[in-house]
Image 1 (cartoon, rainbow, N blue to C red):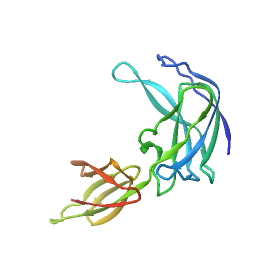
Image 2: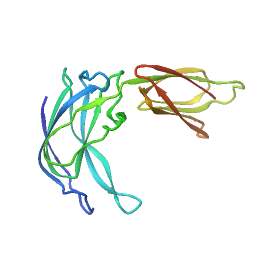
Image 3: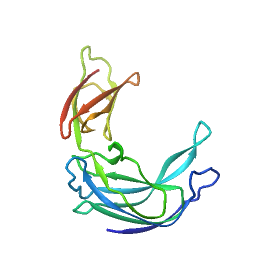
Image 4: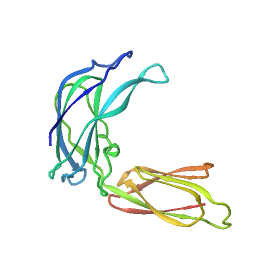
Length: 212
């Protein structure tokens, strides 16, 4: 479904790499499985506003500050967005498949930050990587003493357990691609904070265990 949205943002006091955008922008494309090319229906499509903000080295960095408009892909994976730009620096496309079998566009290597820097018509197809899962066993090993604070996180899943002393098992979503690792973080009592690099094939499950 096509949506038109008027969004206003003033950018003042910075040296921009290009002029602010003014005018109609049309963006359309297709959300697909990166392996098979099959459409992903009902994916959430976000057009995010990008500003230039001062950084620590005296320059400027692009920062996503807001979501200007959203849409969802149809049964064939197609979406269609329109916006009237009124002084924004530029926009960025972000896709969340909202599907346990796929990960969001932040994890699609090489196509994770598609930017709109001019007015007019733009075709932006977005492939999404297939997901995988980590089956994580959390085990309290003897001596079982005082309760612990535990934190566990991966792509977009996280778990926090406070005053915890039992054994448990959780699943964390990963990006399913053997060429690029996932970062899985395990924190114990804010004293031992470790990050592990895990690779997994699409739609596979890998086993991990953390003792505390």
